[in-house]
Length: 153
Image (cartoon, rainbow, N blue to C red; front, side, top):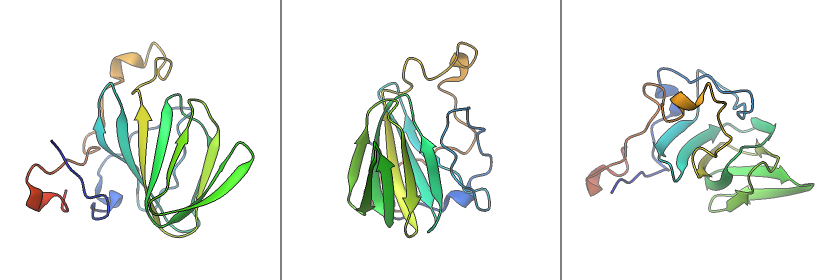
């Protein structure tokens, strides 16, 4: 078992090397190299933490997998299918594969993104498929194995 306390993760600015996103990857605004962090990745799903500062947006995009977004902290507006909803901490939103959507942070926000299955069969081109399971150095946030460590890692 691994656990993460999503409310006390170290800032993503502590990552050393960002991974270059593909053509369809959501463009997350960066400040001081702030980038999404992968908690874990398996054939069943990938879990990613995204931080947005107040006023930052993830423009309209889609992913090839089913996407579940949990607002862990803060408040965001999510636009999809002509609907705009304000989501506060505790809100869970799901998107079908290829469903276009955008997010805008109304205040500093932490989001948990779960993509399933990972990767979707058409996620990578043939040339990229050999690297589908690779993560950049320092991309993962290790889970705690000891209950006393759950909030620090």
